[in-house]
Image (cartoon, rainbow, N blue to C red; front, side, top):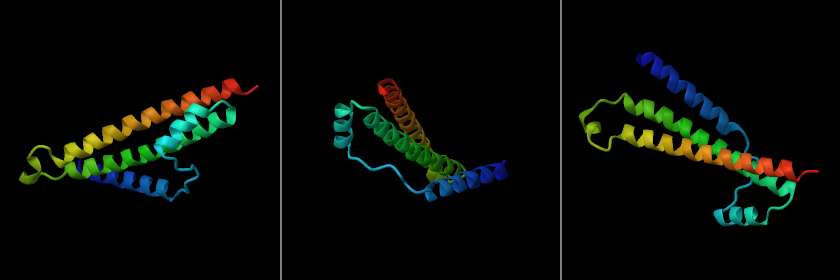
Length: 123
């Protein structure tokens, strides 16, 4: 059982390392800039830019979720009495994983929405 957990942890750490090695191509926008872009978007190119932004955010959040899975597994192996007090570190990792997964799902929905708008606008 422990060997399976170690293999799983190694797999996620390797996957994260490979994902982080890829160059970032999407621009970083502030929340206000994204809101303005959403309000002003009317062309297919603007919608596609928004879809690309949300896909890049989805990828970043998925990477964070994968990191938290590895941390969750690592923390679940610790059985010391100090770690049994609430909130346990393993609970924190689980909550962070669930948060990042939820946010990645929201970004995916936003990207799909803007991709569909881009397809509708194109002649």
